[in-house]
Image (cartoon, rainbow, N blue to C red; front, side):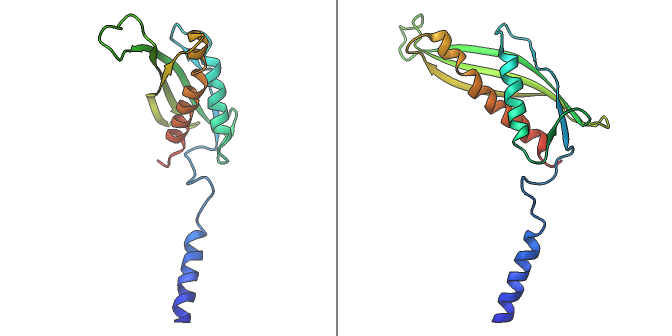
Length: 160
């Protein structure tokens, strides 16, 4: 019985010795995030997304931000704001809105290998404005872009 427990413990230790904090190594260890482009009529979104991408990748201990490694190209391609109704006769008096951002990304390693090209990432939130609807709608940008940045980081660092 003792020898069986010792073998089991040794097996667990040997199996865990390959564990690396943060998961398996991604295809790159340095990442340059290109300037985010904005193809929508919603001004200022590119700066918020640029910040959220940098924060998301900086939180991954396997990745260092800066030139000399993979290159991430990013463009905000769509912003949709749809009015939501709950009654058939309130079509012109929206009190709730669904806001959606779509971001297109391409990731290329330093040696020219394309990890993904023109891949769309999106995030959606529902807003029920109670005061300044424009300001409240603008407050959704940060959380929506944080969600998209997490999706991009996951796609970029997942083992290929």
